[in-house]
Image (cartoon, rainbow, N blue to C red; front, side, top):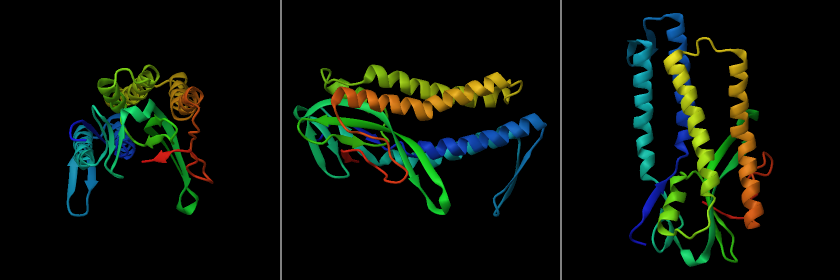
Length: 237
């Protein structure tokens, strides 16, 4: 398939957001304590930066580090069908019944007794009389590309779009609250509301999305188990 729209893995965003929260934490502490500068010791060089400069340079470095990930393509959506570069598989539209964008939780036990949890933004291609193809860590924009090339294809765009906007909006409001107001005057009821919103996003919304799509398409996609790992009956990319 020569022409089409390519999509890369968005897995790096998970770790980028964690580091962005760490930068925000030091920025908020610096601003609320009234520090004129923050000492940054990089072994090779020592810097004195204001909280604002620390946040600006820190997030700039995060942006630069994330750039190489844009060159790792996992999926191409075109007029004839989809192409998966990693396994060199082309699937024509005639073999696909429907397409969904869902959040499938990745869960596993890591070394030293730790637990790793992450909601993978995934696109699922349901095929006729064959296992669905589940491509992890792909942007919702891939579903819009499907509708662009195949407008009649059944999708869950009306459900996945509000879910993604809720996710982006929640994270954006949290970061803006920190950078603009340093969480000053944060009341207990507001803090509890933040906790409830993130609990809904991290745990309840992925379960709801997956159950809805399984009910519609009769598939057996499942969230990971800490003990048995990936349990979905699908081709995983």
